[in-house]
Image (cartoon, rainbow, N blue to C red; front, side, top):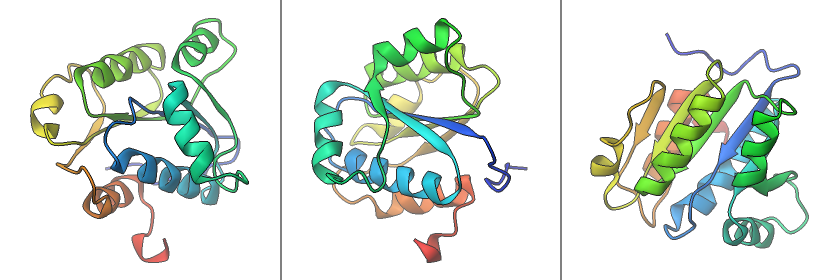
Amino acid sequence: MRERMTDTEDKKALIVLGCPEVPVQNALAVYTAYQLKLSGYSFLIAGNPAVMKLLMTSDPQRHYISKMTTLEKAIEDITSGNDGYDLCIAFAHSDAGISYAATMKYLLPSARFITIVFGREAETISKLIEYDGEQIVEIAVHNPMQLRKKMSEVLGWDASKS
């Protein structure tokens, strides 16, 4: 049975974003931040500088996105023991994205781990996953709605309220 995101007091989440080449990632990152905030999670978004600039442009007053860092800094903070997470949501549309997700899964073995695989080659890319955790796979490039629906189901978010 999937864990519902209800008892979130002092819970921490990490959102891992890959290259912002596929348009749905940015919209779904903001949506994920919104839902985590509603659920009472504190969270950090880790990505490359380009994805962080896109997110800052999408949420200039930081209503949903507050803390961001580079992937390298997130890895450094986890390995040094300065950070740990109860939930990790990793977005991937390429083999590099799967590699970063695998690294985070290795570093966060006790976290609930969800890999969201999207893009034109989602099904092929998802076959590269060799670690445990939940997977959401959808061929989504420009329209995030079907992937958003799947995320809401897996994460226990009431899609009718968002």
